[in-house]
Length: 512
Image (cartoon, one colour):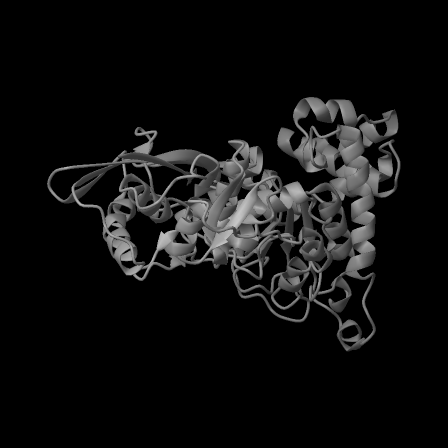
């Protein structure tokens, strides 16, 4: 008898609808899986045999052919165990497929018939909604994650018996619904506050501007001046994530198997801080196996990617950031696969002014030669430096600043309100075309960043004296546009241009 069970796979973070076709006919007792299965899918027949028998069913006798359609797309992972088992039971007439055309299914089977969690449950639930199915059967451990998808019934199942009873219509299981509102309400608990960082008022101002416009930020200063503390507090001043942003970020985390029942929906903006020994693959994603994984640039999607001591990173790992910074996507092409992951993030990098870190510290003596400093600074290439909108010096703190126990400057909540108002202005101005000022292309810059005569003359003088590149010119205009938004004005003045130019002064001071 021929049976057909609906399921799905994930390519990158996009769902791919699949159909598991099972045909059992007389012949030699064997199971043959076709349709470009990978090693994990091929091994599923051994898991399925034990799961079916240990669940009280009879494994069908004869030759079972299992086709994973469409047959020209490679199938990966263990999520097809459950639909294969259901298909075998339906093909051997031990199970009626009353609901087989309305519900998809996915899950990894243990040998005792229990169902283990899988990667990519959220994209699979979205795929079921796109196919206009009534619902999808998922492991109970993945129900909270998949339950954020509306207009589709997410059926949590813990064993093969439960899944078989539901699919045949002999039992009803209440669909799982995740309370998205309560998740968002508790999103900002236990986040570090900006006022906890002593001093550095001008750096906090630069962080506010960066958060308001989505600009990349470089902090340079001696060790122990608070660069890492400041960077860790940047997500706390960024605007709240929208549901669409949270859904897309969670899809990346789901594929990377980094979601659980306590973090079913990623509603806090990610903060990723890879070690300086991170490889190029761990930064951009991919891998040597047949199944790619998202890298740090994708795990930081809609959040912050922080590179501490950036000159210590491998040069190739740093240069791979160029494409994600420009496109907001990372394309990974290997011999066995080709995938695309989203990677729209704020890049924050921190570095010392020299190898020993004492070059700009008035209280300590720098032992580095000019050649040492030049080689150290040259590890951050010019093209990547041009893609960083705001550069800010982080000086050593005085004793009075260190000894002051009072809160230093505004709290994260106060700064976040300013940032949110500026982002709201940008959202209204661009009407969905761009998320923030940092994403403006050259044509939109000319339209939305027009300068008056005084501001234009000031920028012309700065460009000619400091030798900024064309990309740096665009960055200055974008930052000036953000400064105007923070002041709730549509006109970019010479004060805004002057402050924006100031945030490029490290080009000349440290990298000339």
